[in-house]
Length: 346
Image (tube, rainbow, N blue to C red; front, side, top):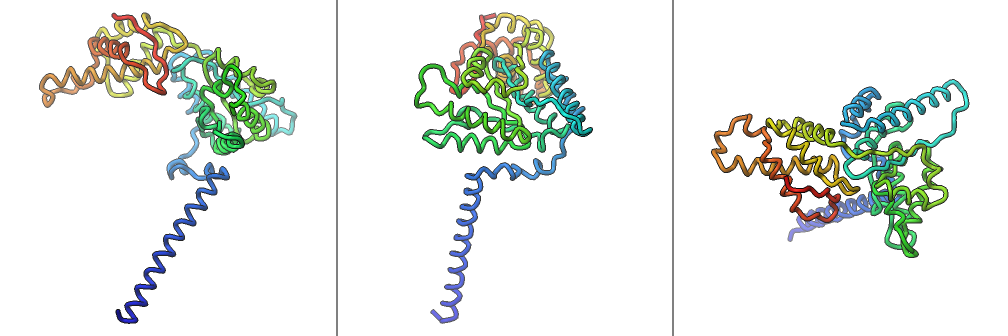
């Protein structure tokens, strides 16, 4: 090989090695940043960075549009009004009432807790109480570690991601499991969380949520826990009429419509549902509708699919709903799924 070619090959090889080393170093720096909890400073995408915050009126309209939840809406409105007045007092140089902004949501699955938490985060952001108004949703697995010293780190990182927004802890009662749990790190997560809530009260809001009965035990698991929350909001189960309305809204939002007789069929389906704390509420309504879509597809596929008109592909019939109920009643629960209410055959 000529000396010039040999030198060129060596230069190219050195460049490749330098490039690999740079990538490796960059990756190490990014991983180190994540370990230090700095990932919350980076937007998940450009749209998140550029999207302007919505006005309080717009977010309030979304809350008002939710089916039911009258008592929840009233308590949220009261909380927002109180915080607005306190902020105005501070602007006038007056003393404000020292109060917490953290909240407790008690309710069965599918009662709108996550949706309302997301809207509250936006509301807090729109009135200037939070810098970003975003929601970070975690459960026990996002807070509790597997070895000594790991839990505090995980909880602190979750809190840092929520800076400027709301940390929403679903099924928070899992942090304090019943019985003797000498090897459980949930208590450490609670202690770390309490400290974060106190030291960073102006940076983030914490909302804990779960079943009413289990949340009551959670709030008494630590002497200083309950006093850290401003309000305990109870999310009631949806009535039969509200579930029918929710199903109709799901259909409309998806460019479908319910055929004649579907409202009566849905009323019968939901009125016969066993309403225990495992009933899915709006989540069950969505599961039912999605199964009805599958039944519709099977029904339509038995004819001339190419000749189907717009009405045929958008209409959900009573037979689709009845078949969907039977599928859900026979469907074994999947890992991670919320327990579904049992239905009697109709």
